[in-house]
Length: 70
Image (cartoon, rainbow, N blue to C red; front, top):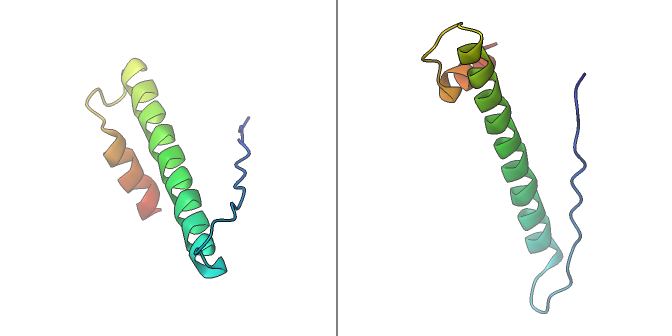
């Protein structure tokens, strides 16, 4: 069963920061969170494969490459 975590981004009013700049920052933060989540899942999958005896030398980057090629 898949688990999803909720990410909330609260815009902070700062003097001198335009709406467009806040939007760019929020997109960056969300992209980084998604990337870290994907890397974490790949690392867990590599560890599970190693513990199961399948592909002892599987690197998380190899799993990411496999997923990206699908």
